[in-house]
Every structure is written in structure tokens, then in C-alpha cells.
Amino acid sequence: MRRHIKIYDTTLRDGTQGEGVSFSMEDKVRIATRLDALGVHYIEGGWPGSNPKDLRFFRRMQDVPLKNARLAAFSMTRRAGGSAESDPNMKAVLEAGAPVATIVGKSWDFHVTHALETTLHENVSMIGDTISWLKPRVEEVLFDAEHFFDGFRANRDYALATLAAADAGGARWLVLCDTNGGTLPGDLAEIVREVQRHVRAPLGIHVHNDAECAVANSLAAVREGVDHVQGTINGFGERCGNANLVSIIPTLMLKLGLDCIPEPNLRELRELSRFTSELANRKPWSAQPYVGDSAFAHKGGMHVSAVLKHPQTYEHIAPEAVGNHRRVLVSELSGKSNVLYKAREYGIDLDKETPDSRRILDQLKALEDQGFQFEGAEASFELLMERALGRHRPYFELEAYRVIVEEQNGRGEPVAEATVRVKVKGMLEHTAASGNGPVNALDQALRKALVEFYPSLAEMKLLDYKVRILDESMGTAARTRVLITSGDGDETWGTVGVAENIIEASWHALVDSIEYKLRADERRSGRGSS
Image 1 (cartoon, rainbow, N blue to C red):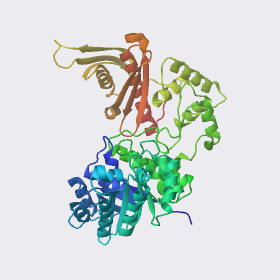
Image 2 (cartoon, rainbow, N blue to C red; image 1 turned 90 degrees about the horizontal axis):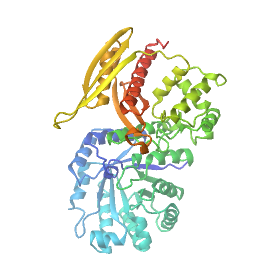
Image 3 (cartoon, rainbow, N blue to C red; image 1 turned 135 degrees about the vertical axis):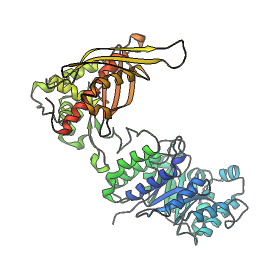
Image 4 (spheres, rainbow, N blue to C red; image 1 turned 180 degrees about the vertical axis):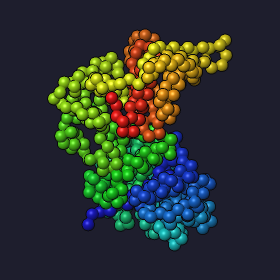
């Protein structure tokens, strides 16, 4: 029978200590529900004794049934010189109503004397008293041995004494914490082996990422027999973060052959990662292992050619296993394989042996030599292929455009106004619009001219706008690359324009964005393009 690793998620408590990470109470409820659906074993909901929001969360969760996970309330040991029975933190833990209590206690003598400012003996008593008092009052008690690895190196016998006190008090798991995140995997494994010679209670691991070793340290502990792993979704946490469960879970299952969450649920990992980032108001990390947009993105022509023959040549797992997908990027490094792959994505029938693929590739490389970049502008690349194949039909023709930015007497914000003359279906349209900048004004004027002919443009929005100067030595005469991201509620796409004039570059990107939208509408309606 395979080993089963218990996953303890602390995104809602330790994860929220990360800079810029904050969840409302309802956010926490939604994340807890998703974590439960994923199949984690423990969800640490917060510290009910530290703030009213966490206590409200635990009360709210009493009406939310969990199918897989057990809810844990976090707290510290009783105060020095006091009793567990009268300690307000203990009362808050019981009031939270969670079946699991996780108690953090000091295991580094330096912290006991300098942070708690109490005696080593009193700290050991605080650990034992707290856990033994909670033991009959909750279903399960865990002990987080804070700063354990630093403490073990400084005073081995004392660090072990704190574990012994927790074990005697009835803790279900003794969790070894690398709180400062500076321990290396080899040293951690050696200390875990030594601890196992003195402690029979089941061990857990909780590590931070200050030396970029949190995932590696968690896996090293598992290899040494630790069956309980703590971490957060996307590695959120204080300073450099916590161990990233989004990397740990698939590695345990797909690399080490261990059980943790139900195997079918592994395919939900990418969606959960992005969902959590969204609620944290953070942009998903594109290069995140396993689930990031770039995790299975291939750019070099030789790589793409090999992947199309045998995916395992450049992919360590099947991307679908974690809910991700393969992406082929197009750039000056591309070969015919990239072009053929992208053509299939867009429903374009292209044969490797025909001159068409070489013509597209040559145009691609020529444009990138001028400063175009299609990695984030796949809509422009699709239109490039259509034009190279002679299949492109413009939806409108430009007659002229003009943009004016006026500042009146240096008072208030400058006013931007654009006028556009375009020919649409044989009719000349002349429109004007203002905006909060020249590009916004140009976008408004162009869509104003077209929306009567193409009503679906009303649902299209410009989501992002990026500008990059390509040759800084040229100063204001440098070529400019504009990347625009647009969306319509169903799809998001990127387009690119390059010119020495930022307005002209923006115009080209805007035109591509609108043409892609209209072409996509035709595809959806089944009319196709001529």
C-alpha cells in the first residue's frame, strides 16, 4: 500500500501574512470550499484570538459542510506565568468551534529568552500545559515547533525537550518548522533523521522560502518519512513566502508515487492556483512550475518539432495532468513546426512541404527583426498568417486619422481628441471622439465609426496597454512597440504594432484587435472568413 501524505493548507492564515495579500471573510470561505473540493486534509482558517475577522470566519464556516478537510484554528501557547484555562487565546480557540487546534510554541532557546523573555523551563511548561488542556476539548491538537531547525542547531537537547512536552501533552502531529526559511535540504534531512531517533510521534514539516528551498525542504522531509506537509497555495506567505503546495502536491503524486489528494482532482490544480491569485488581487505567476502559462510553452523551433513528435522530449509530465495545456510561441527562433502548430490552433490547413509555411516564417522573422513581438500578440500572428496566405479580407479601410492633445493654460488634465475617416462596406464614415489619452481617444473614434456596421464591437474592451522603446539610444526618435490586450467576455487576445510614432504603432495594434474580434465573431457564428 502506498504512503499517504496529509496536506495541511495554511493559505488563509500564514499565506495572508504575505505582503499585499488580503482576503475578505467571504474570500476565505470561497477558498476554503475550493481547498476542500481539491481534497486537502486540513485547512487552517486563521487565528481566532488575533482579530475579529478570523473569528467571524470560523462562525461562518459552521454553516459550510466540508467533505474532505478538517478546519484548524491556530493559536499560541498560554502566556508565561498564566494558566491555559484562563488564557484568552484558548477561549477563542474553543469559541471558534473548529475540530482541530494548531498550537505554535518556541523551540529555539534564543527566542524563549529574547522574544518571550521567560525561562526555558517555563516555555516547556507552557507547551505541555496548553496541549494537555486542549486535548480533551477538541478532536485533534497539532504542535508547530517554531524555529525548530535553528533551535536544534543552537541547543539540540532543548529543542527535543519542547517536542517531548508536546508529545506528552497529546499532540497528534509534531510539526518541525523552518520559520526563518534558511535551512538547506541536506541539513534539514539530517536533523529530521536525528529527531526520529528520539521522538516516536508522527512528524510534520512547515518551511518558509527565504533561501528558495521551501519545496525542496518539504520533499526532503517526506523522503525521510515525514507524512504531514504544510504550505500555501502559490507559496503565499510572509517575506519570501511558504512552501508552495501547487508544486509539492503534483511532485508527491507524479514523481514520488505517493498519495495525498484524490488523483482526478489533480487536474483542478491550475484553476485553484489562478482562483486564489485572483482573490488575492495578484497576477498569476506565468513561470510557476506545473500550472503557469509558461510551464509548457515552447519557443525554439527544434523544441517544437520534437514535442510534436514525442511530448516527453521537452515536457516532464503531461500538462493536462495538472489542468494545464501546451503552448507554442512564435518568434524569430521559430521553425516550420511552430507555424504549423499555430496554424492548426487557428483552424488553418497548412502543409509543411508547401511554400506557404516558409513564406509565413520569413515574414515573421522579418517583422520581429523590425521590433515586432508575437509571443503576447497571437491575434496579430493569426492575421499575419491570413495575409501571407492571401486570405485576409479587411473589414474597413483607413482614409485618414488625426489625434490632438490640448492643454489649456496649464490648468487641469490635458484633453485628447481623435478624428477618423474610414470606408466601411463602401460608405465613408467620419467620426470624432475624446478620451483620457490619445490612444483611448483613437480607440473610441474608430469604434464609433464601425459599431453601426458591426454592433458586437460594443462588447469589446481594451484591457491592457504596454509600450516599449526598442532603441533607447535614439531618444524620442526610437521605434516603439505597443502591445494591446483586448477582450469581449468570451475571449482575451493580444495584438502588436511597431512604428517610430507611438500613435501609429497604437493604431496598427488597435486595427488588428478589432479585425480579430470581427473574425472571431464570424467563426462563432459559423460563417467563416472569405
